[in-house]
Amino acid sequence: MTQTILLPILLPLISIIVLLVLRGSKLLQQVIGLSGIALQLGVALFLFHEVNTHGIQVIQVGNWPAPYGITLVVDTLSAIMLIMSGLIGLLVAIYALPTIDDRFQRLSFFPLSHALLMGVNGAFLTGDVFNLYVWFEVMILSSFVLLTMGGKSKQLDGAIKYVTMNLISSLLFLAGIGLLYGKTGTLNMADLAVKIRESDESILLNSSAMLFFVAFSIKSAVFPFFFWLPASYHTPPIAITALFSGLLTKVGMYAMIRFFTLFFVQNPDFWHPLLLIVGGTTMIVGVLTAASQYDVRKILSFHIISQIGYMVMGLGLFTVMGVGGAIFYMVHNILAKTNTFLISGIIYKIKGTYQLKAIGGLYKNYPFLTLLFLIASCGLAGVPPLSGFVGKLLLITAGFENQNYVITAVAIFVGLITLFSMVKIWNEAFWKKQPGDYVAPKIDLPFGMMFPVVMLALGTLAMGLIAEPLIQITAKAGTELLNPEEYIRSVLKP
Image 1 (cartoon, rainbow, N blue to C red):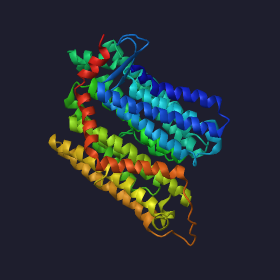
Image 2 (cartoon, rainbow, N blue to C red):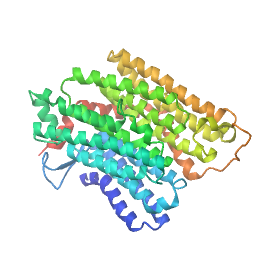
Image 3 (spheres, rainbow, N blue to C red):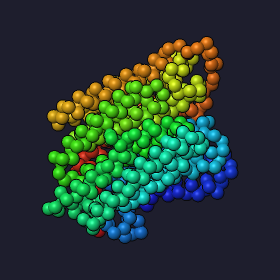
Image 4 (tube, rainbow, N blue to C red):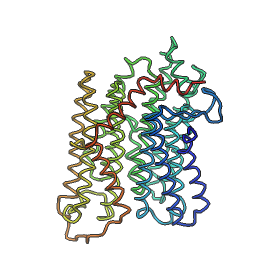
């Protein structure tokens, strides 16, 4: 059944071809687009079951033995991220049905969404550094076109900043690949782990590691390379912003976790403090800037940055609880952050603006929407018993156990300021009266907009109320990452 590993890449590729052939029909675009992503989610769930039952799954494409061929690997972390890719892709596609312009649905949205998901899935599956670069480029190309969908001046301005920084990241990534191959003679991740761990001169790989670290920091919007994100993420249609916020920065974070637990493990006295400093700074800068904004999309965009800092913190702690907590927090953040953006789109549909000063009165007319916002925002802020509380508790506990008291204090402080930002949106958009004399009539919200929001809110609740089995899964992923012998053996076996 190892051929199943190819399906998260082949299914979107086949969908793209069919969608392009049938690009004139809106109905067929919707049916094929949704069905293709639903199949991807089903395959991801099957792969998770296989990994959980039979261990790490590997396929050598073309039957070339590692480290010479193209290797695809599914371990617990990859399986988790594939599930999140399919889930977010499907829910955002449903949300897009009533919100994306008909012309774009017929011509480009669904093929580009599948292309983006193909790049994301390929990045999660690859066991080869160069192929990770290739999948990043697939993501950049498709996301750039999605970002400019509509052709408005603000979108083009944001897209230029987005693609410029990502191209710089790609150049650094490519330079790192060249240096790494020149020093080791391989780009297979498992083979790199063996050669670097056995080398007496592994310290010389710090130059390559720094290039990769900066490249992944740009893609993850880590301090000080984050400024492109709030300049671009608020410009496209909200469904696209939600898709980006849920997945794109997390792919960069996934790559950072993979590299710095599998083979860049030399010189921990340098890397681990650096990761903690960068993580803490990212948290503080992101959350303080978010607190000063009055555009809902910009508040949420800056919070993407601050939440990434928690994941970097978990990696810097470099314990099973810390790395497992970072993975748990990543899953939580994908759900909660996507949901807050989707809710902001509903607010825009009701009020016609994202500016908090011009919004009010939502609590009175839309109590169910208010409840959904409270679940998503309080989850994001870490209010018990929601998912964010569990994720932050894992990271804070790991910080105390590792005696990293400064970063732990920063994590607690940032959680409080995040709550302040969410309360700010609540007070302005939901609680206060509508400014001015004109009161917009109550409207019926489309099922396609509400269903994804409800499902993501249920996910946030479930991760908090039924946390124990999920903690065990992410702890297993953390154990596999910090003890990669099974990964190496599964990939390099004859």
